[in-house]
Amino acid sequence: MTIHSDSMHRIVVYITEKKPIIEGELKALTEVGLRNLPTRFPGLKLVESKIHPDRVELILDFQRIDEDVLRVIQSFKSEVKNLAKKKGFEGDSLWQWQFDDEPISQT
Image (cartoon, rainbow, N blue to C red; front, side, top):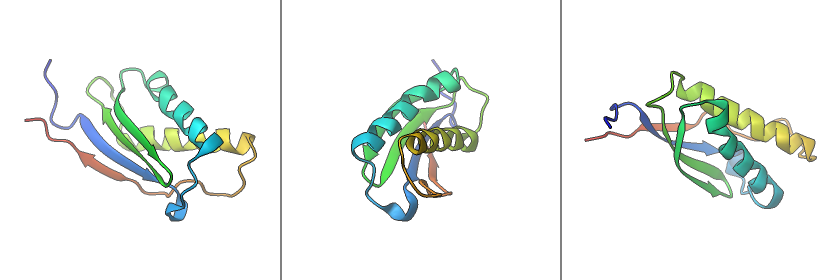
């Protein structure tokens, strides 16, 4: 299998003000959002994920998907935020608007 040089991305999504709030039920809802990504975007491969109290770190493989990183991450953040609101999370903003995206070089 050939991996395109721009298909793998290391992404870090931060909580607003980097507050350490991803724990308990919010952590479980974040896990649901991660599990749903390949369903929402067929062909997307979730290579690795780590949930920290203030951020989510991902390695995503876009080789078999014709979608951009921004749309996938916005979808993930939106789903988790909507799930959290249904469970009583208060506040207008859960995630920082921007996120870190570093293409991973395949050599």
